[in-house]
Length: 216
Ligand SMILES: Cc1cc2nc3c(=O)[nH]c(=O)nc-3n(C[C@H](O)[C@H](O)[C@H](O)COP(=O)(O)O)c2cc1C
Picture (spheres, rainbow, N blue to C red):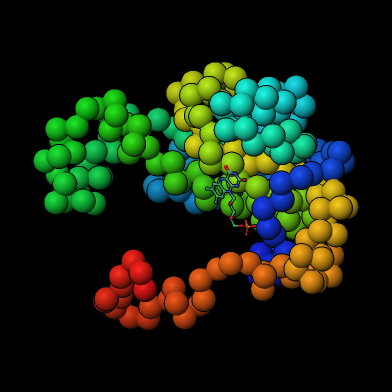
């Protein structure tokens, strides 16, 4: 059940040396490939990085991921790359946000392309991959804090923006014990009860969602 996988998953920031088998990596990527997208445009590419030298290069250039040295312990990084918008999106965005029609028309086209990029789209295959990995006991953590431009230079990416990286790996035994002690649960158990999440009733509005204030 997907709910069982979701309950096990947490962002792991220390991985063991154990390598992820090739067929598991292919399974993870295949689950990403099957993700839906607007108009089935699939505006993405997936960079699959298992070469430790490249992982270290991305980690060591501290400015790329803002000194997140734990990333170097991962044995697989997947770079989620979003196609750079060619400004055709303006028609869609103008109909989506009619009150901003004139402002969108006046915007610098290059900047518009950048900020209207459908970066969120590639998060759907990304989360497919996270869940597919967890199904195989492979933990992961999303990395959104990165300098997309330096990362693109290191990975030779052109025509696409690296929206996020996801670090994958097996957790190391002390990590699993720590989580076990911390959460007071069995090693492979349900960590979901111990996570800070808004309550179901707090974040769900049934019917018309009137009177939603930020502080509520
Ligand atoms: C889009 C996105 C970007 C994230 N970026 C980072 C990051 O750069 N570094 C990091 O350590 N965790 C990052 N995370 C992980 C979150 O901190 C984590 O998911 C959140 O605290 C909830 O914890 P959990 O995943 O263990 O349930 C990111 C998560 C998402 C979804």
